[in-house]
Length: 167
Image (cartoon, rainbow, N blue to C red; front, side, top):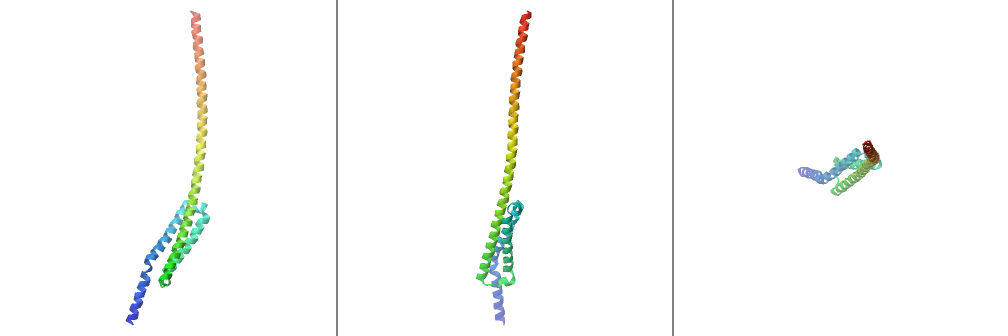
């Protein structure tokens, strides 16, 4: 009986201890996918990349369920090959979720950049219009100054001639 208990205890320890390294990478992949979805949401992915974000959430949900199943008591009893395959599946699902979330984030950032560009172009057009008006005013001022200078010279010339005629 002690031998059987010892073997059972050893198998339990081995079954629970082996998947730790693989489980960490699957857990890390799921965590990475969750972070990518959050970044996409914060960037406005729901508005601009809604389909991609919805797909990312779906992939993430599948990965999370698979991870929960793999970490359950029944999941730990599986063979090493089965655990490895399950971990690969979890990593694949999580990577797909991350890629879709990153796509949604990129779409949102691209849309935001387009809006900023449009606003900058409007501002530039307004500034160019203001500069054109300022140039027109400057040209009108120069023309008025030239006319004033010409009138002043004519007045000085007339005053000089009047002064000569009075002498």
